Amino acid sequence: MRFIFKTDYAQDIRLAQHGGQVFWYGLLVLMLLAAPWLVPEYWLAQLTFVLIYSIVGLGLMLLAGFTGQFSMGHAAFLGVGAYAQGVLTNLGLPFPLAMLCAALLAAAVGVVVGLPALRVKGIYLGIATLAFGFIVEEVFARWESLTGGNAGMHVKSPAIFGWKIDSSEGFYFICLVTVVLVTFGVLNLLRSSTGRAFVAIRDSEISAQSMGIHLARYKTQAFALSAALAGLGGALYAHKLRFLSPDQFSIIQSIDLLLLVVIGGLGSVHGAFLGAMFLIAMPQLISMTKDYLPDSIGQAPGLQAVVYGAVLIAFVLFEPLGLYGRWLKVRTWLQLFPFYRKGMFKRQKTFQKSDRLK
Image 1 (cartoon, rainbow, N blue to C red):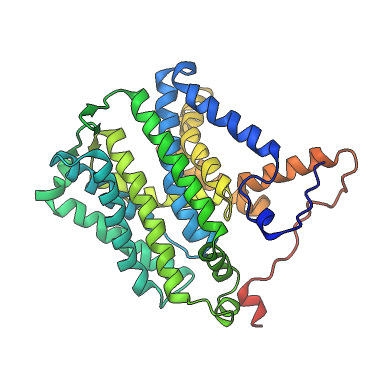
Image 2: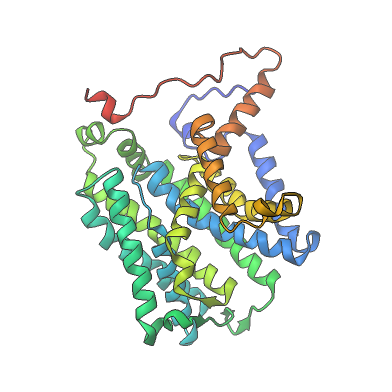
């Protein structure tokens, strides 16, 4: 088992705690770079979707996992970024500039949503964001002159400095570079005073306010950053699908994004990637097992929703830390074997801010 003795503050905020992390993450990046030559085109497309949803998941993780703000309308920010990217690209704006504008527009919408939401919290914040999601979906459907309405809108292929990227391999590398940059940005944000303020607000708003943290400002920043990352993911999502319609950004999409962060592991950057892999892999697994089920079950229209609900209930009851929490327990068990204690991973009571006030 590896023991890390920290002697100064610089060690505490270092991205890589030891050389092993540098090796394994470097190997992962090399495998991702070689993926277009190692996997078939279909699985490369699925991997591209994993990267796109990872960006959106990182944004929602900042809001829900690190700041403690509940959102059930995050698909609206995804849709704002996607439609902004589609409209600007079709007008001839360069691809990188259109992506930046899509992220900024989504961030502006996040600020507009975040300011009124400062007066509510908990389930009431979730209801407010849910209502916002319905409003945005209706705007997409009614604003036919801009979005094409229910008929949808086609999106052109991205082009960088006159080079048109119409191959799946080229677009995959764009998504990979974007994910790496966003991940480094999120990790550095969490190491900063702003990130620590987010975590303090999540743990206890009263304690954070007593330490001089401006709740309204940091909550609004969390909404803006989360919406910006969702808009950035939406911009890539628009080019991947090449076609946008309002029903792609419904409440079902918002629930899927919420499942992503909960099942992946709230409060961890790794959880956003694990949740994205789950979100893309689960429909594939369901379709592969349908043939082995009776027709009354395998052909049922709500099978996927039932499976998602059962998986979510199982994680909430037996593994609230998500897939990343389970991996941490498995890794610790392997490191301590055979000296682990039987009750080491027994769930303990955690005191929330409501418990401290009783």
